[in-house]
Image (cartoon, rainbow, N blue to C red):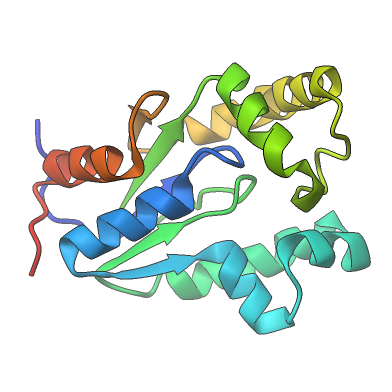
Length: 174
C-alpha cells in the first residue's frame, strides 16, 4: 500500500549499502534536494568521516552526527543518506525512513574494495572484513529495522531502488 507524500526521506543502512547513490537518484527523480550526513559532517568540520573518527574518536563523531541529523530533520523535500551507524531518532514527523538492506556477503565484497576509507573495518583481509561486518551488522540491525520500510537492494541498481521507493511513497516529481 502506498504511503502518502512525506516531506523528508531518510535512507539508512550499513556502509556500502548504496545510500548515497540511491539517495542522489531518488532526489533527482523527485526534483528534491539531496543531503548526505557524512558529507555534512565533512562540510562543518573540514574532516572526512574517517579522518574525524581517527582524530577525534568515534564518540565525538557520533555527537557531531546527531547535531547534523537534527539540522537535516528540519528540511523539507529532501532525501537524506544517513551514515551507517547514525541512530534513527524516534520522533520524526513528516519523515519516512527506508532501510536499504544488502546481504552481509555482498557488503563484505563491496567493503573489501574501499576498506581503507572505513576506519571501523581496519583491515583489507577478506576473512577479517567478513567477521567485522557480521559483528557490526548484529549490533546495528535492530536499529535499522526501526525504519518505516525495508527495501532489499541486493540486486537493484541505484536507479531501480529509487524508483521503488518513489512508487512506494506515491511521490511524484514536482
